[in-house]
Length: 349
Image 1 (cartoon, rainbow, N blue to C red):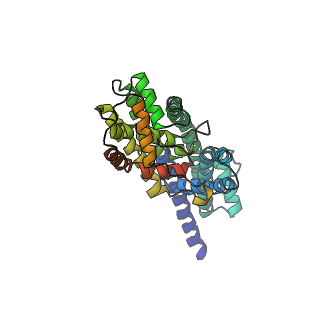
Image 2: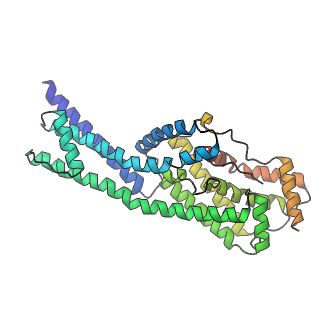
Image 3: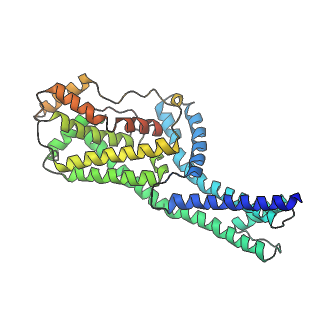
């Protein structure tokens, strides 16, 4: 009396497991909308714990950066393995419920079907139908991932081109004053909006790609000293400094770029903070120095801008107040994302 009920329960559980896994795959790579997939979050979080444990043993940032550079690729490769394993378990329960003698034989049949190895067993029409459906799902899951790898790496490449170009323009260490100096010398400060339009486009792409493909946020720059979070903060601080410190009209494109940057960074921040919940433990990180500038640093930045011949505001106290007010629009997001991705230390000004 108990066996039919158990088989029915196993069949229901297997169907739920298979459908849930397939739904996670579709929402991850097909659904054209940013959606946090709980199953993927569990997988990524588990792998992150292992990498955090390894990174905690490193005695400097360079070594931790080297370790964490492998996190995103390993997590991405693990994802289809986990999906296939769950599908295999689900079909194992289904085959047992349909009359396979033992769980071992059901598992062997499931694995053979999923990996399209073939089987010599004569199991009847119904079980063979499930065999074919399992083989189809296995191929579908692998195809989804492989087809989206080029998309992911193209988005990564576009992101890093801008990050690298910013490093060239902002000096070493990269600062807002160095970037403003380059903008001034190249004529891109007020007369040419093309540079700011490029950065606006970059922010728009960051928002779309890093929420629809969240694992992309953890792909680290080829050079250890670079980071997309650091680059985003640099552009926002530069625009903020221009708005607050200079007694000169600002272009509409500069304002659009600053707005796009604030929206982009905050939406990525909210995606991870309220849904993914995978912020690394604080003890695994170097003590994060505050990237917010202090008043003496701000005064020095204004002196540097004045030395370039730029029209600096006479009321520096008001300029400092305006700078702080605008920075509240993105500072919390930058701080969180810097910890989440183990961004290298950077100076604001």
